[in-house]
Length: 141
Image (cartoon, rainbow, N blue to C red; front, side):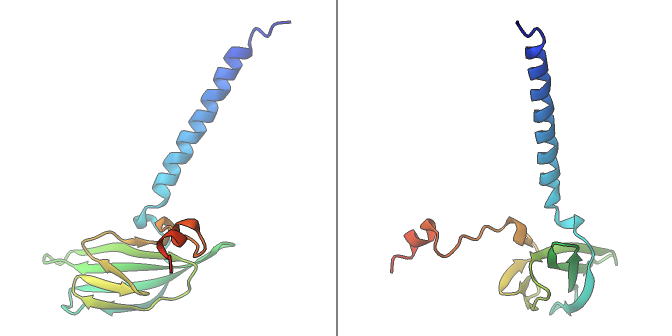
């Protein structure tokens, strides 16, 4: 007995799977947006040497997952406009040590972040285990 509708059903199911994949790729792409991070509980803030920027740290408690620390720079522009920007996000920690290196560079947990550069997001950092083959190739001693 031949299946008359097998091919159209297969094509329909394939299209559904492809649609779900596209939707989840879009969701994943927007999931790493630094401006959509949870607010968190205020820890402390540090003012820049020139007094124009303030860097604030917040602890974020995520249910059944972990804790994280979010760092936000608040700048007061010349026209008294206030600009906020998340520049630090690290999962798996409860606090962080932050300080200004100069008026354009912040150091948070030994990571230097330039105000004009890319923010630090631990979700996008790839850390290879010490015993991985790639690390062994570089550490030949």
